[in-house]
Length: 285
Image (cartoon, rainbow, N blue to C red; front, side, top):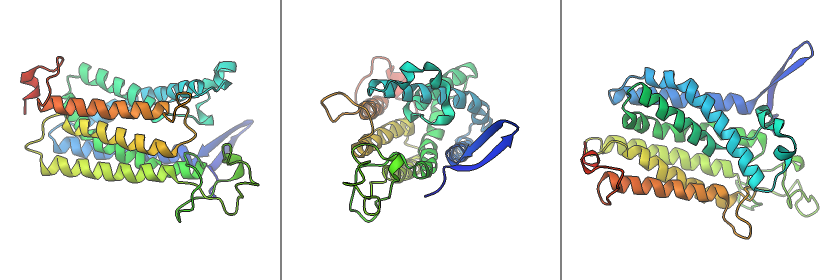
């Protein structure tokens, strides 16, 4: 397997480890941002909006992703962050959740767009497919870290997982030998789904551009991202959930995200009437 640490820098008594995870995530963010600027420009917007907003979105997103991960860990019965609250700030040890990044990063984007009088729907429609592309490009980092895998499988694309990265009961090497046990590459399933979903949204945005109402591509992202994650969660036994059920907290949030996207999409086309969405706004082209 690949060493998660790409290289280290020694400065006196200080040692800095550069991880593949950080390199791949930052590369994915920059690629997704660049693609979003091109799409925003194609739609008649100013691509500098995205570069100017990026630092605020990134900082807020990292904070949100960390807090969500910590909350998810505690809800799942973990005690490490309760016993040692300072470890919450030790982000380099790992532990980020994409939903927290979306929530806090999205909040920062809303504030930025409001203060700078930016067309929010144009902005959201431009970045929506590229959020999926960015997620997909970062997923190989999970392979390097040997994380986000599913249960054992006999399928030909199953991957090996070292003993020290396995969760119970698969860390029982007598029952699940290293040489013969392979696991579902859950991160790869999500990567494929995200690329396919992004391709569909990009195709729809061009094929039906004149008929498409503002916000529809973003609502499509909500639906596809939510449905995809809910399906992938069936292969994620490591995720904490509601006791006595097979429903993880992440799967519930995913389903709610998809449902919200569907409701907003139907409201945009006035299939249903939403009290917070005036009819004249919903019919605007």
